[in-house]
Amino acid sequence: MLDQLTSANFAPHLHSTFHIHYDNGQILEVKLVAIQEFAEHADQPRQAFSLTFQSTEKSFYLKQAIYTLAHEQMGQMDLFIVPLGPDQAGMNYEVIFS
Image (cartoon, rainbow, N blue to C red; front, side):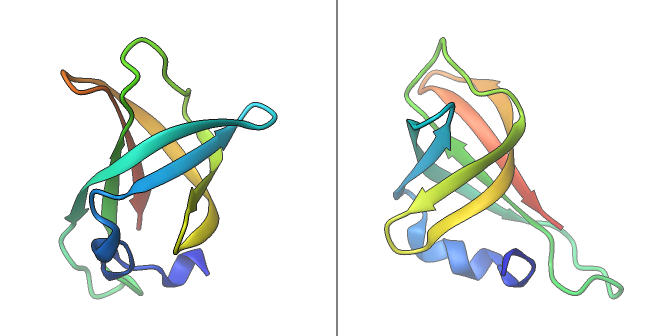
């Protein structure tokens, strides 16, 4: 299923809430704040894209790892999530689909 997702699947959920499940039942609430498409390549089965999520936590962050990301309408998916660092609003995380 993950190999069939495109940026269009996430576009209707821009600025909506997702939940990252970690450490035996802990949940981090994040918002999808950006979707970026990368240049298309003829040898790729789909256009690569990235998602940027943001939490309001500024001092706490998850280490890069595979986590379960859940959304009310999209369901759950296991994704490799990487912390990008904090800004004024909170901690940013990235997921890349290539």
